[in-house]
Image 1 (cartoon, one colour):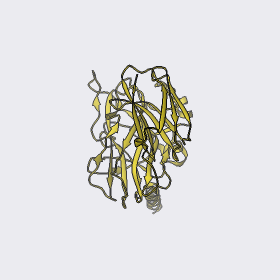
Image 2 (cartoon, one colour):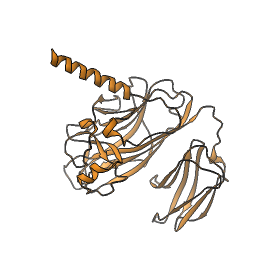
Image 3 (cartoon, helix red, strand yellow):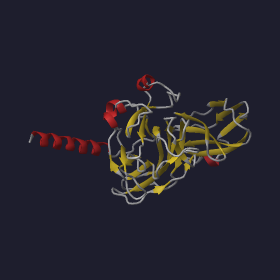
Length: 332
């Protein structure tokens, strides 16, 4: 009887915890999450981790291994884990001590043949997007175990409704998202523009980062371990419906540029932005080669971009904010 009571109590606690973390209500843009409290608070509000996800199924709830205790990149056991973020721990051979001591964390997963290959999914759930539009997302996708030979391809998709049966894949920048592959150790900023897809929806909205296909052997290999993958610095922004905003993409005088990408490019903002802004330099194939998040922008503010060591070619300067998107071509 006592054992049954204990199991029932644990089940009820799990269900209450899952419900508590199942969704968020969006208030002020942007919504950000750095995952640094995984070890003390577990999964952040709005985030769940799932296995057995498909293009037509949300997936099955699973847990953050060891209740969020720090894990190391090279651990073989499958599961969702609290990894050190490669934003701060930048060496692929960092010791377990260094990884455990890092306060900059990432929500991650170690895939194995029996866990998450395919079907591993990081899921963000929103209660609704009423009176909100023009959603944009950026986050970091990290390939953390440089000894993993297999390559996992990730998809960002979305669905609406409490029990969705169909997910819509989204165009991302970069266009192809992979982790794993022997010697690969990366920290890639992923950008997603939802266009009008999430505008003013009076229902549950799901956004997923999901592995819909089995990992494949890397070039020259017939097998090998699957990847340890992390996501970090989740940033979802939007614009309020009816808000008085300007589309700065149509204002050619919004920025003044001097210098060049060969040595140093200086950006002067001729108008203030009431929200945060993301400054990006992209190659023509969509690869982000530079990015800086500005918490606010005041009139006359100067920002320098230098030391990029870019090859010759054409690049795109892009400023993304609630007040619109500015873009212009640059030649290196």
